[in-house]
Image (cartoon, rainbow, N blue to C red; front, top):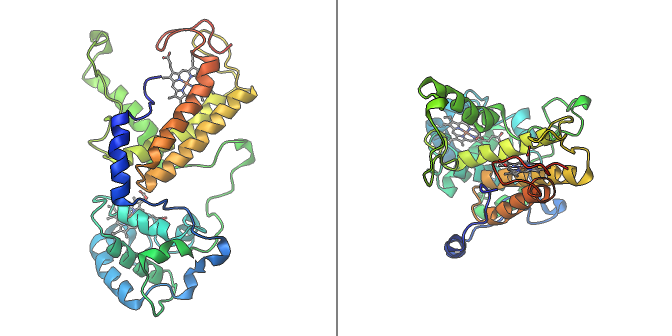
Length: 314
Ligand code: HEC
Ligand code: HEC
């Protein structure tokens, strides 16, 4: 498998310096146990912060999230759905999400202070009261959203052991439908018959694929969602391998490899949402291992990559 590789050592060196300069922290790790977390009802931000946030919001957010936080193009930022999306998460999750991924059309343009002011205004809109002290960056990991039941309908029993949706429909479309449909749309201008295999170093760069439309981390979000949600297709009973043998989807080691792949892909999605570049050294290794643990036994025992192995899926 050529697509998943540990970063070359040159990258490790560069990362080492970057890590220390930026002081990247584990953003979703709660700093204490649940008892030490302060509730959002405790007056965790100041009225002055919310007032500053209101100006920013009107300018850069209301067009997509609604003047009353009701959601328009983007999701609502107050009410049931917003609370259930953030159930039990530290406030840091929302602040980082805003700072790193919003405004949707201009991510990374807000300072941490602006993201905190915006969060204060959003909390005010959600009827969480202001307090005396200003909300500081250091407080974000120690304040938690209330536990709120999921708004989505309960997963139907006939879904069996499928994991719940990992991404929204747009992300799933971009992750799976977009690359594959574009391969088909490409037939309008190119006939595959006229295109024998091109032997150049980089005939098609999958890593760059789509990045003119969904740049940077968004492509990584989508890839993580696509891997999470499609891994279950490796468990479809009756699927044949290229050599005609039925894939042994009921075996424990096969199921374990798929479960590992789903778990690490979910981890990749969390890290991608947190724009946590450093986490991906470890995640890439784990993802590679989840693929390899199955390939070692069921693929690489017969046939080269791109070929048909008689001993595969035995
Ligand atoms: C061009 C439209 C657009 C603009 C402008 C925009 N957003 Fe968003 N926002 C979205 C979309 C779409 C999503 C859902 C997809 C995602 O999270 O990437 C989202 C998600 C969010 C979320 C996560 C919601 C949840 O349920 O947890 C927050 C918080 C948020 N935006 C805050 C903001 C803030 C604050 C601003 C202004 C600085 C802003 N957004 C500007 C479109 C927008
Ligand atoms: C549960 C087992 C399993 C898991 C997990 C798995 N694979 Fe595979 N994979 C296979 C088998 C078996 C084949 C051979 C299929 C055949 O010959 O029909 C294969 C084939 C492939 C091929 C095609 C190879 C060729 O000869 O053209 C690629 C590419 C591939 N896998 C990538 C991945 C990646 C990337 C991951 C992890 C993100 C992964 N696989 C996870 C079992 C698995």
